[in-house]
Length: 296
Image (cartoon, rainbow, N blue to C red; front, side, top):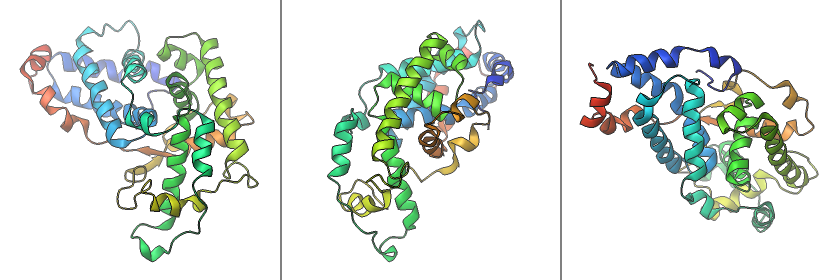
């Protein structure tokens, strides 16, 4: 799997070759271009909106924008920059997501909700067909994903790029269309908010902290927040984010809050649905086909 956020990716000419081929009427090249980027766009969307089904809708909307504007790509910047600026503009300006409506937009309210969830012993494994460790992990990933929603959208996106996907300030600034200094400052503020919350509350960070995923699991199952028959974050768990992000930033690894950042990078890198299939109606549209003059 390619990592479009790697520093070296800027010299990767594969995208440009695929674009040239697609604009000359090669449908397979267009489909390969979608395959190369759909998982990364989906994983950004998922962390922005929380719910997988909504992330699928956002990803499809973004891909449609990229495809319909592809003929305007002039190569004045890398395709990475051009395409992910479309992603950024879309997720920053989209309507309020269901996840944003149902969750909390600040850490104080989020912690009160956690405190109000009673600590309980884990239920009997025989009660569920799913392994208990998978259910506990679902609680962990869900909670960490909820923390992201406590950041405003720009902070959230910068945290996703800078901490979870470990982009450099050069790449992050380029995609966000801000200065490198500004990117570093905004990343530092978002990182500090996450770290302060986890360092004070999260048992994954400090064994002396009050909150434990396994203690909240039964109550969250009983309340319907976690559904063993419909897991949100473990269905397509093939990789962790850390395993697909090849290049690590030494600067980030040296920070005091590396442990909290690592927890976010250990979250699932979800395999998306096949958006080529989902977009066939668009690709087969006559006006769209006329733009690309498909030959196959």
